[in-house]
Amino acid sequence: MKDNISIKKTLQESEESYLNVILKNADGIVIVDRNRVVKFMNPAAEVLFALSADDFVGELFDFPLVVNDVTELSLIRKGQNPGDVEIHVVETNWGGGKCLAGLSSGYLKPNADARSSAPCSKGLGRQL
Image (cartoon, rainbow, N blue to C red; front, side, top):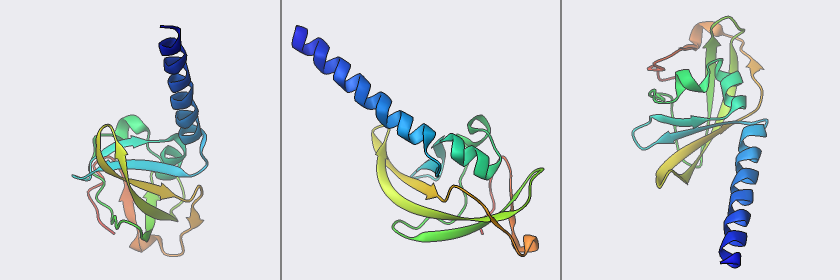
């Protein structure tokens, strides 16, 4: 019985440590399911996209996602300067299913041509 309690405590501490790394990471992390629906985003991703997780989770992520490849997105963000961000896509497990994780650089590079950028808004139905 004491061993079970110790194992559960160790597991809980491990989960908390991993979650802390994800939440405190300077790089934006967006988890998208096979249907391209956003399942999770960390605070750094909220800053990059200028959207809260509440507005982004459950919405279609209709940007290019190629596993093991890098895609540069040009974003127009409401009330902020446009910028370019790189998305590195990897396959992972999330919530018991296969998902894609987009790991973006933790900053936006100034966008030289905002006219070619797609708005970043709720619905995110624009492909770049």
